[in-house]
Structure formats: structure tokens, C-alpha cells
Image (cartoon, rainbow, N blue to C red):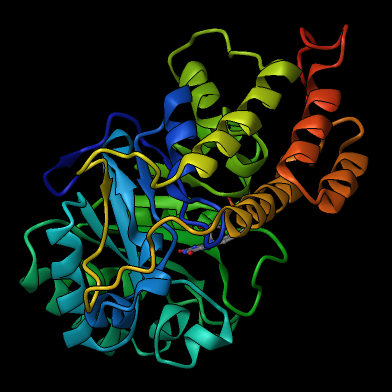
Amino acid sequence: MKIGNVTLPSPFVVAPMAGMTDTAFRRLVKRHGGCGLVVTEMVSSEGLVRGIDRTLEYAEYTEEERPVSIQIFGGDPEKMAAAAQIVEGMGANIVDINMGCPVPKIAKHNAGCSLMREPEHAATVVNAMAKAVSIPVTVKMRAGWNDASRNAPELARRVQDAGAAAVTIHGRTAAQSYTGLADWDLVSRVAEQLTIPVLGSGDCVEPQQIVERMGSVSGVLVGRGVLRNPWILAQAADLAAGRPVRTVTLAERGQFLLDYIGLLVDERLGEVAGFRHVAPVAGSLDARAAAPARGRERWVINKVRALMSWYSKGLDGGSQLRVRVNAAESLRQLHEIIDEFFFAAGTTGDMVVLSA
Ligand SMILES: Cc1cc2nc3c(=O)[nH]c(=O)nc-3n(C[C@H](O)[C@H](O)[C@H](O)COP(=O)(O)O)c2cc1C
């Protein structure tokens, strides 16, 4: 599959998820295989242009993750074009526009899904960006703003005409947020109409579902399913290739968490120059430099807690695991809990079957 001049080794994509799909998580998913593209957490165009460092780390990525798409949000065509140039300068393969975020804090600034309410303006944003950069500009949108305005088909045509190289549709409206089901019929209808690749997103939690959805789209973005099962893209690739689907043991699931903790603990420490692609920061003081040890420990614990709320779903004893992880106060405790749950004698070879 190609998006503009970027070839994706697989049509299965890690969906952008704010607060969840950081570079450490994406690298680990990528290492398990089957992943054709990763998209960063959304980052503010305003923040990128002004060089405010608090939010800029969301745009960071490492070489191992390529091809990488950096997702930006905003509603001002000039600022979005300038932000796209910064993204291109960071060496990203693709710049993606968030037209799906329903959160009022974002939507009220004429950004995120509120761009879907002004199709002409949305097209102006795409056009300004497409003219400003030579990397592909893509759009991720929802089915529409609400049930009375399911305008993804019309908007997708417009952004294609304005220069978008691909469109992803999450088949829910902003009003639905995450309730109900994604409307894949609508996604398929858009895919039939457009000449650029159309990717779909929503409710794929089993590898079979990803492969089935490929019947009507060029690619599938998987969000919550990857948080629950980081091997899901590799398993979908197995299925698509007619290979036996790989199984994942409890110990392997435990190791994923240990690897995630390890990458977070070491983040920015002793990394060689160029390892991490970062956005330019205004001023000389870079607050992204290593945090004090205690602050870092708290940050890692909070990250693992956030992942655990998804990762433990469907696991036998998952809710008790969640409670224990939420009560952990130190990395040492976290390690003990993981050891006990995932590596206890006699269970390490168990294959994990996640229940629905
Ligand atoms: C915690 C969370 C954070 C998300 N953050 C973003 C985001 O930053 N940008 C975006 O375009 N979509 C975001 N999404 C939407 C997902 O990319 C995806 O389209 C949606 O969750 C439906 O797919 P799924 O059912 O596979 O999760 C987020 C979803 C979740 C659950």
C-alpha cells in the first residue's frame, strides 16, 4: 500500500491515541511485526509553531518506528501549514490532520472534529498544508459531527481535491464519542468513491476483524485492540498470509510490560545524538531533559497504570491486577506485581486467550 510516495510494508496501522501510543509503546508494537505505519499522539500546531515544549514530546519518534506519521491539530490554515513544515523538518514520513477529536477543549478552537462542520474551511487547511510540504498530507476524520450531519463522504471528496494523499475514517460521529458501533458501511462507501487510499478505524479487537475489514478499504487502523493485545497486527498479518496465527503466552505478556517500563525508565538517558527525532523548542532551556528520579518514577507508574486499564481487559484475574497496579507506589512494587501475575511458577507457558 502506498500513501503518496510512502510505501507501507503492511496495511495495518497503530492508530493515534493521546496519552497511550508514545514512542516506547509504538517501538514495542513494531518489534512484534505486522505493523505498516505508526501515528503519533496528536500534537498542537500552535505548540509546534511556538516551540512550547510541554506538548512537543508527543511528536517525538525514533528511526525504528518508520514509516511514521505525526498527527497535528489546529484550525488555522497558516499555522497548520507552518506546523506541517516543522513536521517535515523533523523527518517524519507523513503529516496527518486530526479532524476527529470530539473533546470540547480541542473542538471549540475550530480544530479536531469541528473542522467537519466547516468543510470548505477544512479543505482550505488541507490545501495550505499540501502546498507547504512535499511529504504526504493525510486526514483522519469521523463519520460526521452528529447523526444529522454524517458528512464524511462529502468531506473526504473535498479533502482529496484539496491535496490529501489518504483519508482515514473512524465510523462514529463526534456526538457518539466512543459509544455505539463504528459504521463500516459508510467507510466502505467513501472508499468506493475516492481515488486516494481510504483507511478505516473502529472496533477491531480480534485479528480476524482486521483482515475482514480489509475487504473494503486500503488499510485498517487499530486503536484499543492494540492496547489490549499489542500482537494483534502481527496476528492479522499471519492470518492475511495464511500462516498459523501466533499465540502469546502469559510470560510474553508480562515481558511486554517489563520492556515498556524499561524503555520509559531509560527515556532520554544516554541516547546517542539523533536517536530521538524531536521538535524544535523555543529558547535555550530544554525542559525535556531528564526529570528528577522521583518524578520519573511517578511518571512511569502513571503510564503503566494507563496502559493497564486496557491491557488487563479480558485477562483472567485482570480486574484484580488493575486494582493492584493502581495501588502501586513504586517501580519495585510494580515489578513484584508483574512477576507474580505473569511469571508465577507453572503459568509461564500458558497461552493467553483473551475473553471478549
Ligand atoms: C485513549 C484514546 C485516545 C485517542 N486519541 C486520538 C488522537 O490523538 N487522535 C486521533 O485521531 N484519534 C484518537 N483516538 C481515536 C482512535 O485513533 C480510533 O480512531 C478510535 O479509538 C476507534 O478505533 P478502535 O475501536 O480501534 O479503538 C483515540 C482513542 C482512544 C481510545
